[in-house]
Image 1 (cartoon, helix red, strand yellow):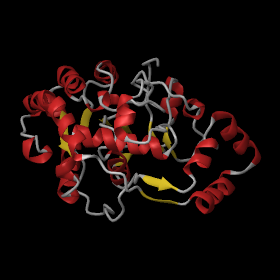
Image 2 (spheres, helix red, strand yellow):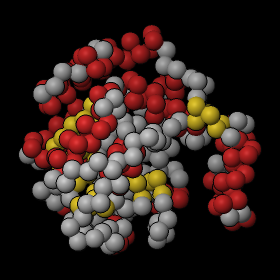
Image 3 (cartoon, helix red, strand yellow):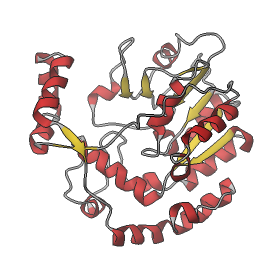
Image 4 (tube, helix red, strand yellow):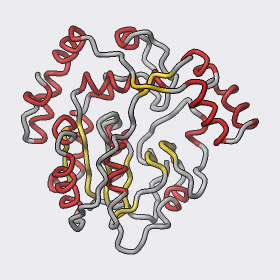
Length: 304
């Protein structure tokens, strides 16, 4: 990553992953004064890696992507070239709350940028991340405990460092060191997800946008699904098998076949109460440190 972009980005939604960033992306995209690229997660300012080769491929114009790892300043700039005059440009990348160094990189890009952070109960966030990784074939563990006991693979795309990605205090502290507190707004997932309309009003005010009543809040985004024939689906996610399918079949045909053969429904796997309590004890010191940074009690929201 070379930090020599010419497109000055006005605000960043920096995570945490599995804490509503996809919903924020979808909602803010509806505001006429906001421009967000068709790539939801750009990952330009973080030093992340991925096992998925397609994450590194340059995005095609006018095509939607959930995630890419943008490494070129020219490509990054090009993703914002359609922003209209007066629109605020935003970058929504949960990996920006993983590396402490990212805060300084963003500050070097635009010291006046606004920073939005959304935090979630750390154990529940980690469990949700595991479920997502399992649903897309990155994690083959039978249980969450088995996933936690597995060797750590810290790559962002396909990794399993679930608990480390819930350790918010150090990277959050780095943002408060890099930016004035008035340029940072921290949302707590358990709070804002229950009152999205008022929260979005606060967010638009924080970003300096005009009030907007057109947000479509009916759909919740980024659901986790459990698929039929998961083992067969995982086989087709192997790199060589995926590449072969992409060469032989169009995207539309692949999607239709996936819906018919594998069909998804909401997962029924739950976080074991005993394991949740164990992890809460491990994250207690972390929670108190976060409270000191944001000036808000998390005990009632997180239960520890």
